[in-house]
Structure formats: C-alpha cells, structure tokens
Length: 126
Image (cartoon, rainbow, N blue to C red; front, side, top):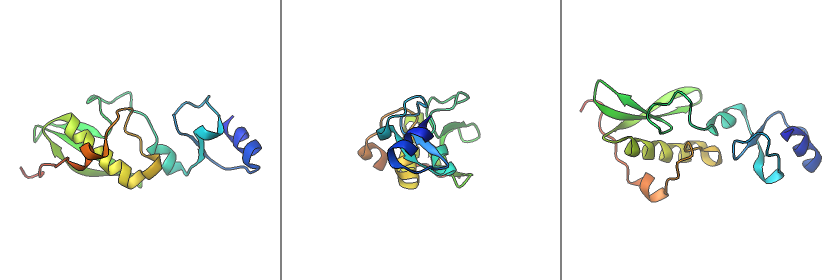
C-alpha cells in the first residue's frame, strides 16, 4: 500500500519504500521515504531473539563485558566492550547515527547525542 500512496502523491514508482515508524499499515506521506534494501534493514526494531534488551548489544562471555556491534554493508563491526548494556547501547547509537544517518534505529530506546558522545569502550585485550 505504501508504494501506491507514494505513486499517487509523487507520480513515480519506486522499488522500495521505508516506513519511518516501522508500521506498514501507516501509509501517510510523511511516514514514507525512498530507501535501498540496505537502508531499509537499518531501520529495524529490536530483534525478537535479543537477550540484552538493547539493539546492537550482546554479552561477551570470554571478557565478561557487554559487547557493542553494528552491521554495515552486511558485515558485523565490533564497537567495543563495556561494563553495562546501557553503555554498549550508547556506543551502538552513536555508530548508527554516524553510519546510517536518517535510517538509524535505536531499537525504540531514546538516546541523547550527549550520552552517545560520552561512551568509551574497553579494549578487547583487557
């Protein structure tokens, strides 16, 4: 339905439409935007299999720290190890904003730019 709404409003067909608020049935024009498949994947909510409660965060058992990671160009990038899942999530949010721009999705958890700027990872060797 989003494709039809876009075509009617803009007079053009686009191969992929992204819903900014992640609700496919909400097809108002301000909620729609053109997207590549990769951009559409960045704007995803928290996975059902997530155990940390934070997007881009998992437990690193070997180091007994919370690991932050992000996927870019279909490859996972390590962002650092942190004492708390909240700190790891801030690192994820900072990277998502820088790498994914307007398509960054924090998993539904609001984060301020100041909080994200103040996160410092631990070294993997620590």
